[in-house]
Length: 127
Image (cartoon, rainbow, N blue to C red; front, side):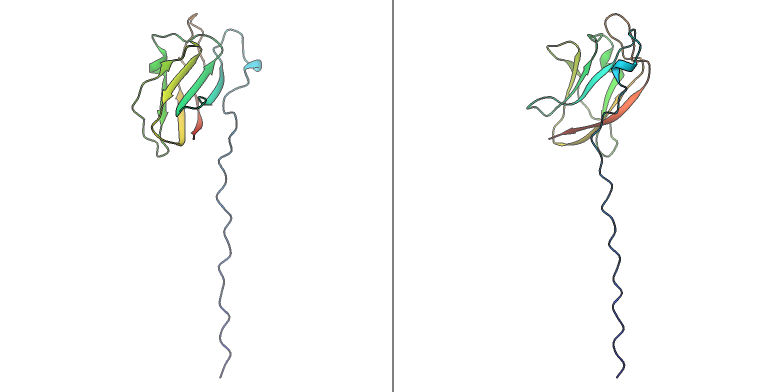
């Protein structure tokens, strides 16, 4: 009898590309002094909260309209941005660990009317 045909093996596919945790906002040292700057975006220590730290105190009347959070499937999360004890920090509580996308409008302003000047968007990971 003829020898059995060799079994064709599927080539192994490469694992999906990792979503690297890198800074997705401009380097503050390269920006004009008159522009509001994002300094940090990440998880608040020991909390399931997104924290954004800026170069100046945020305008409490407008910052909520200029920030939003998207879930991993692109849906806008319901919730409220609050100012931290440090009024340069905006905070948003999330319900569970995961990858979220933060969207900042270019019109985000500090208390002296300096604006962000460019829209920003990037991931934040919550454990």
